[in-house]
Length: 474
Image (tube, rainbow, N blue to C red; front, side, top):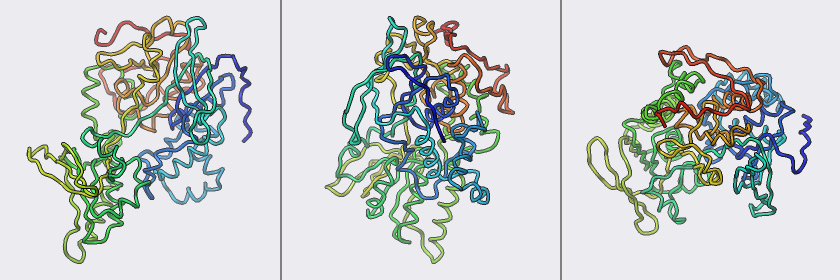
């Protein structure tokens, strides 16, 4: 491919600065690429693109179809589709005969890296230090540090932009009782995000405990189980949920990951949204049924010659506290939620499959704090077009801050879902360009989620989000 990025004068303001290059901002960059009038640049602290490298377990698949790539659901004719990636690698016919609707994680990671290595306008090795609003120029100031190959500061820089999109993603979540163990380098307690880096050490440990009853916990337990000797597995798998439950994967259930449901959820009151998020865990935190079946098959295979595998699977358990015993053992203090009983478990290694949480925006948005509008829990308010609600003195100029994968409290459980990436990116670009470069469907689900139909409104770039009427009267 031959690319001709738009010429940019050093002091000229950009139309868009993206902060973070994960799948969501990579999607936005790919869809922005053909919009030649748009001057956009994306910054990322890491030296190159990597997508959950510690969880690229052999055979593990992503939980959405390959059509949920960076661009297809907004522009299937884009040169950045997964199918075009296969064509560029002479793998289209093998993929055709493989008949795979869900691809392996490693292949999704390789596809995204292919896009990131060929797409212009991406600046890896750039750390964003501050974001401010400059009222004299009616522009955002973005300060950054350019890093060398060792991650050390090499040069300072600043750019001005009319719009910003935050795509800084999530970070591993570690429960408070286990933080001291993770922070002690000599203790084999690792988050699932780093599993492959420590896999050999974990396999060599005498006894391993996996904490977490979601997909990552299931995949890691299965991977460890397959490499432990029959009858001497010495594995524990613990989870807080009441069961090792399958993910809700019915076709109508999946309609919770459509633009229709996202719009419906956004229109609900804040209190209802907060309650719903806590009850919908099985829509996105359950375990793929095929993974559960593979675990059962592996356990059953180990009973063929008599006896039971030395593996304990216990849901409904939380870790109250944890500590070290000498230099080689770990003691977990457990509580069974339903029985209201407590016990202790001694183990040699722990894998925390305890999920991820949104990275807080406060640090990067500290310079914009006087302009931010917040909800009753001091979270940034986000309009239906993924724009932070800012003071009218900012938005009246046509400038906005967009967010990606940081708006679960306003847009629901589909926020981190790869299947909505292209639609959200297209929504952002339609709003930002004051045009409709990506016509989007007005209906995407057979389910009607409320008694009143909600018709999406196409904004203009100069249109400031209304501050009244306010949801919940705030």
